[in-house]
Image (cartoon, rainbow, N blue to C red):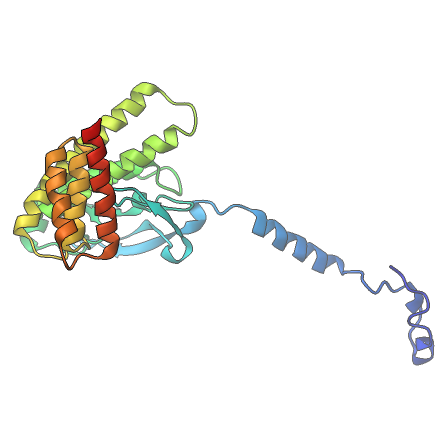
Length: 284
């Protein structure tokens, strides 16, 4: 609004045409900047916005390369499945957990990538590198198929280097979670029942392999294991057993968590919920 009288008297000080000044008018550039800021706030954060390229040096061939990684400070945990699969807003961080060297084919989950003994590196060079032909990912994000390929390479490397049962099991578990994520994404749009059924079967097979590996590791390896204490692992074994149809074993494991004095309340609550779920199965 132009106020013709509000600046009256300033003419004597050298100011002309002040009667045309709009007290509340914004400068064009300021208005544009504010509009751009509002648009930026409205724009949804894409998966690509949550990623960056992290540098690695391959412990097998010393090649320096980059791999896509999630900016942990920018993602928020939305929840978790009963088998501890984490779910984040805006991105499935599980897709970026397997690191693959594009030169020699060595791959591993991020937590294991740097730990390779000389004898293991020798086996990888002989059995992996000689056959490896790198196919770079097409886009700036990893699809579920990209992620599954990278995790399969990680599992193959773990077998070749004779890695621990826990590492093999954890890789299988991550792959099962990826199958679940891919299935959930497919079911948001048009999908073929056959493809969904195949993913369900693949997930169950991978969960079975994870259960087998963790069962062996529980009695042979030290804790913490894959970032979990023994009571979290007991709970996970119980839940995996339930998911693959071994309810008696699930009950045995869950009871160990419930009677454990040192188990965290969070895990005991999960174990109690699982016990009720298993009792419901009996009633059915």
